[in-house]
Image 1 (tube, one colour):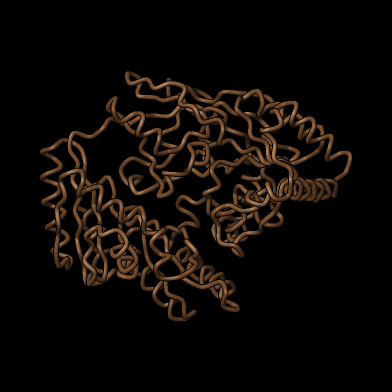
Image 2: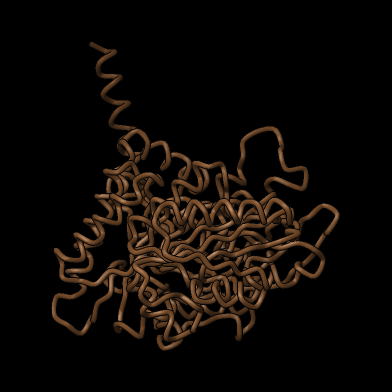
Amino acid sequence: MSRAHDHLIERLERILGPGGVFHRPADLLVYEYDGSVEGAVDTAAPVAVALPTTTEQVAAIVRLANEFDLPVTPRGAGTGLSGGAVAQRGGIVVALTRMDRILEIDPEDRTALVEPGVINLELSEATIPGGHFFAPDPSSQKACTVGGNVAENSGGPHCLKYGVTTNHVLGLEVVLPDGRVVWTGGRAGHAPGYDLTGALVGSEGMLGIVTKALVRLTPNPEATLVELAAFPDVESASLAVSRIIAAGIVPAALELMDNLTIQAVEPAYHAGYPMDAGAVLLAELDGIAEDVRAEGEDVAVLCRETGATSVRVASEKPERDLLWKGRKMALAAMGRLTPNYYLHDTVVPRTKLPAALRRVAEVATEYDLPIANVLHAGDGNLHPLILFDRRQPGAVERVLHASHELLHSCVELGGALSGEHGIGTEKRAALTLVFSADDLAAMAGIKNSFDPKSCFNPEKLFPAGYRCGEVRALRAQALAQKLGIYAM
């Protein structure tokens, strides 16, 4: 180890104590990855991992990183799926999992003040007895942190009715790239001036490190009903989705699983999914009891009209929980079918779901790869699971080519690159499919205004040619050309 490295570790330990710094190669190994498929994103080792417990410690770490001219990568639980928490240029990883306190629950204002390491599900479990819950509920909610949800603007099954993370964040305490600590937003909700909270949510740790979040809590509904509709194929199930929304019904959640997913889930969790169904639709309705009953009847009728072979109603909590357990554990169940899977994330307009799912089936055939479909059907967010065995020569390459085809197809259908997993390094090269050069330069300009040295989570989001230093060069070149024109 170099003297500079030893000096850095010594300084970090002064800030955090010996137990707050990891720097040995064996300790750093786990921080080279997030939840992404190896090969889809690059892995990289940090110089050190810092585990602060206070905002002041985070600010001190950032100032120290500036002194040593090292990049900083914030990290939550590491459950992300796009490489966002990987230290692409080394430097210091700031792991926020020890900042895990719920500081305040205010049932009158319907808010909670939490540190970034609070587990998503634990926040809802803490607030439900008081009559509220935290609505964003990604499938990883048993492990993912609120700070990670803020960084990726996470969604989940219930975002159809309740919205994604940005709809539930009122204010943030943030450490900026120069080490300053600022607050954005607040309890009043709508404040004059630029919406800096909105800019920070979903910025993938590239603009600041969140050290506290003031989040909105949602009242527990009076009644909840879950319906499981079985269909002969995914096309009829996806048609039912459009019919339900077109009828003016907005379920709390509307999830679709195909037969391959059912084959993995049902034998493992016995959720009650018909094994012979081509697809199942899981619809949750909540609100005033009378409205829920009426909408439940309407949803059942619409499902039968579009080809449902059966509709099962679950009004009791244990039965609802079991149906949802099957959905939430779908990814874990894939291990019954294959050693590895690549979970994709893309979005199409709801009316394009049948076409998108047909294309998924075509890609599965073209690349000889089984693809299981699990999707937030209500808002068109597809999660194709490409199943493979990485031990087979060329398997990872085939998966990545298939993934590229799926992404292109969804964009051609008018879709988006990501619904909730973020861009990170996984999809940064694909941004040019959707955004123009001017769009990307404008985005890079925002990054540059927060982080002119590009020290926070570098090498993420932007494709080559649009990262901060490159954008500055492009702008200088454009200005020189204009001045040359004016001088003529």
